[in-house]
Amino acid sequence: MMEKNVIINLESGLEARPVAQLVQVASQFESKIFLEVEDKKVNAKSIMGMMSLGLATGETVNIIAEGADEEIAIESIEKYLSNVEA
Image 1 (cartoon, rainbow, N blue to C red):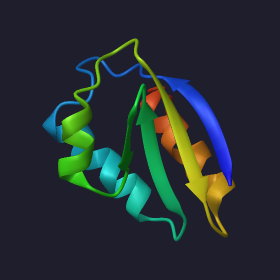
Image 2: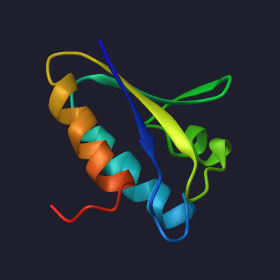
Image 3: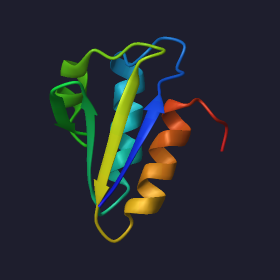
Image 4: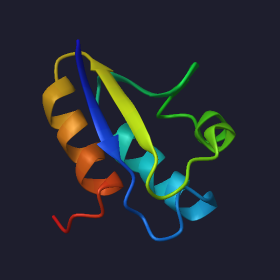
């Protein structure tokens, strides 16, 4: 299992379209992937779960991944949330 804290750097925060794109990124991987903020931990592959977090630009989230491709999964989600061009 790996964990990494990341600051969200998306202009609009995590609204509907960015959440859908994040779920697509997370769904590419075999690993179980969760995002954790304060006392909430949700499955990063669940649109409804991700929407429930209501994350905004500048907030810090903890990405948690467990599985065969956990390292690349965290890197990919960090790139997306940090708004870094691939």
